[in-house]
Length: 299
Image 1: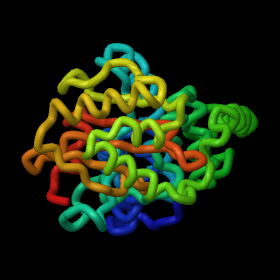
Image 2: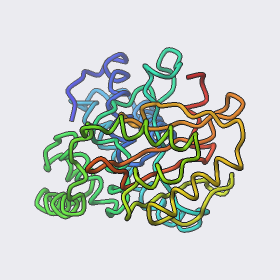
Image 3: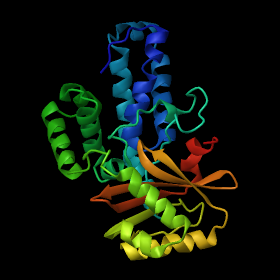
């Protein structure tokens, strides 16, 4: 899981990897940062003699971060039962498109690849905490099951079974994210939304499309998924009617084309899309201000 030495620089150099692991486990950059900070606090709380006994601080930090995330995933299920409306993972901006200063935000440390697209993160939410840890550590980060066993407190064979079960849940969620025409479809949705063209939107949406929104009870949004292309189109136009002055921007969301809505210069909504055969099949809309903090800088 890591081979850095015990120097302060070597230990600190593991932070980026740990943030990447924790975000994929938790679906939140803020929670990932807290988990990693907790792991580092435990490392620096060790006596110097104990630190020197640890041959690979990187492996130790990964194991501790994994255990912290496992505990958080367990408690998150209860918290999300009390959450107002649907809970969605925290969307991430592309720092090359957004004015992030110096990589100080934990979101700036996260590598945007197919393992952080919204469709994949949503599938991870369907897994048990142990399945998610085994699957992410093995299938995404290629850690051996012998090391994952130390995180989960189970045998390597049991961890292998957990990853296999999670893999079945994931199904086709790991299809290539750079689907042909995805950018064009999202751009067409933007233009149809701006012109309030219901017919055009219906044509761009799969008849069985589903839109899920996350406002966290802090802002107004639909509390249940909106199902069907026509219903989604009507809802989108109704929202546009109630939000004059809304500015739509084409921006990367978790590494793939998405839309960002601003009003008076403030980001209010980040939308992710799943596209199949030239039509939008899923839309995930995050409006909870707590989850939009990485988007508050000027883009």
